[in-house]
Length: 322
Image (cartoon, rainbow, N blue to C red; front, side, top):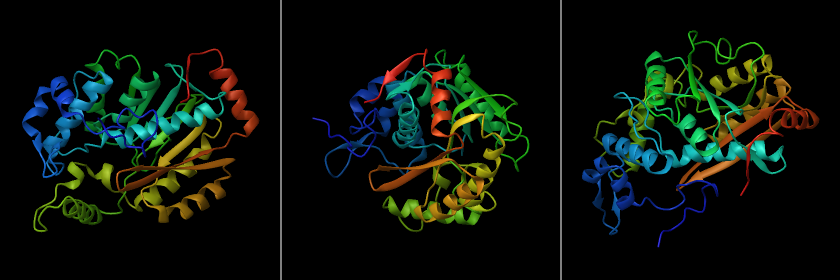
């Protein structure tokens, strides 16, 4: 009998422990990495970047029908269950102003800021709800990788597009076109303020996985500068995002971003208050011992949100919220 991870979103497909026999059947490449741990359970070495990448490949194939997925060496390889939670809680935001039903289909347009080489959010969002995605990134190689993933998977190709942010000082500027509408934006911002801070964070991660203190860490199991750190760190990045969101306040229903540290929330709230956000929501999430959350904001009043829903979603496909 599988044990449910009750802390994950009810619609998250990863609420049960990893079923390695099923995953290795879907993706035989995973089999050499599976072993019996001291508790008598099948597992993999989560400190091994190759094992984690092949696990992701198996999860994407088994649960989302993605036949071909890979990322360049040293690029971020994210944990899929947590990424899926963000998508499902964002879907709830839309359901809240759509009579309890999640609006589904490719008329729902989502912008992923910092899509990364892995393209995880667009994959999950499209395969779960049929949403259309625009993925933006400052890293040209990441854009190339995400574009390739979409191109070689027929279910993704017509629904995912990617835009290279040429100016690293901008977030929405140069990406969102005049008059273009997005129902959601999402972002997993760089956590750290410097390469040294990112290195220290990865050392802690290796120690937490029970490895020897002297082991040379692999940065977050991959990760380029734009994925892991930026000047001003997470708060600086989010403040910039909030400031630019004002410029396109009528072009998006809900903006959102992950916030890695609860200590940063007060500074994010101050920035949103200064920007004149109409409504702010903080959604707590958890996976195992890891606590996370995202902050969502809108400049639309309740009546404007209702009008948005009526005009864009009312006559379209939707799925019941469970």
